[in-house]
Amino acid sequence: MNRGEAGKIPFSVAIITRNEEARLADCLESVSFAEDLVVVDSDSTDRTVEIAKSYGARVFIEPWQGFSYQKQYAVNQCKHDWVLILDADERIPQESVTQIAQVLKDSSLKVCGFSFRRRNFFHGRWIKHCGWWPNQVLRLVDKRKGVFDGRAVHEGWIAQGPITALDTEIVHLSYRSYSELIDKMDRYSSIGAEDLYQKNKQTGALKPISRGIWMFCKTYFLQKGFLDGFDGLVISLMNAAGSFFKYAKHRELTKYGRDKLHQP
Image 1 (cartoon, rainbow, N blue to C red):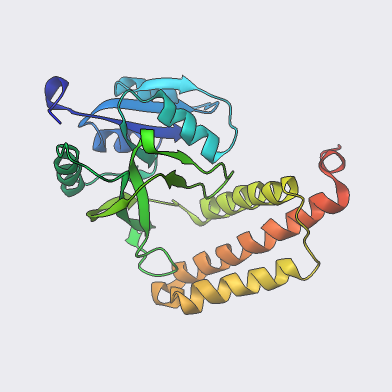
Image 2: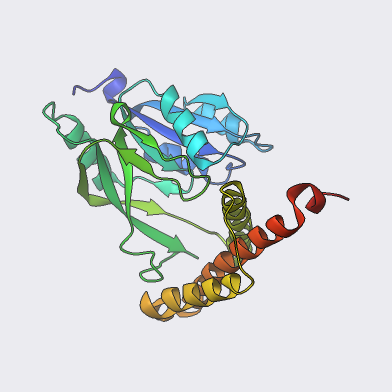
């Protein structure tokens, strides 16, 4: 694979956004070596689109229809077969740039994708436990040999062949505050509840409690969140709350119905 225009590497980067003006520029700067930048935005009300265009990204506006749909839509817009799928709060360090360039130069590739170790940061500190490390994520894929799985949240790429783990990392800046952590927990639990509702699942009265307790024990004790100090405790509690409210909201939807809940 030869270098493209102005020494850029001929592959694509796909990013989905919504109100990411505070984080998008650094993300795009870290992948400026890519020949094709694609940003799919969902009704941002800030400067996200303006920032994306200033970095030469091709911007597409697509109403929100879930993580899998948005990311698949972004991948479909990419010019190249090999696509690096990123979130706006992720960064590609220089050592990863070198590895990406090396693997994409190999014309005899027999794999469908490459995974990276993801180093997650919270309050500027690397979180080494809570299930946040080691966190292997599939990010560089051959779009001809896979598809997103359709899940509304915690979406995954289904590769039609082998995946190779690269000995390098992606930096993930995750949450900027406890408030942001709470907001995301609330959004994700709502999405998860809606997914269960669409699948006609049933949730008993004790399930939110049992799942919440199990998630706290798993994160704080089994995954050693206590070694990450107070932030580890907060992350463990939020994981527990997310699991609790996912099932509590699903029970609420099942009992009262979506239309009744949205009545004024």
